[in-house]
Image (tube, rainbow, N blue to C red):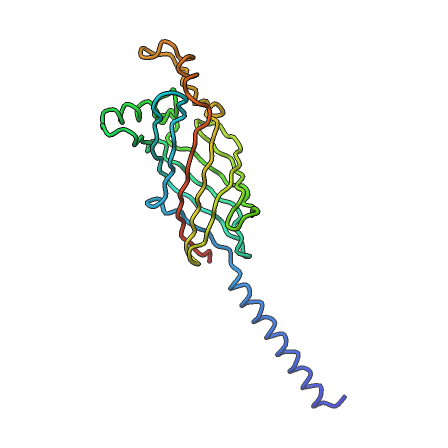
Length: 217
């Protein structure tokens, strides 16, 4: 092998290594993890009062914060959400006084005890694609009143643009699992067990969440 041929091989090797490193660097730059931050002003949780007889109450609950993590492959991984339990409001009655009566009841110790537990947390552990397009199985831990229970539900998740995500879901939770029992006896309630039996066990919930993408440097 002559000297000129050896130089050509060395130059070729250097160019190959340089191109490889450049390609790796470009790939690394493109494949960065990211996360979606909750838009708290546009996101809301709707609820329906678990009443088995009579007029059913309904209203909304706001969120304090939330994120969904996205892997380098573009798949959603997990997330965390904080619910503002102090914001729970009823909207079914036109009279402000009657709405306040319901709101005070929900905030009280019989129900959500918001003075002691002002927030609730939903930690999403897995997000798995379901059979239908844009449908995902969500598995996570919901902590309310200091009680953590695992829940599962289906959600519709859509990427509206490269930077915006929407999550919509309808689910129910068993109020007894978080001791939302309405059994506390007080001056206005001499028969707590009877009142509790008039309230259905399942609380229907509807989620509408908007999240904006933030890249991790």
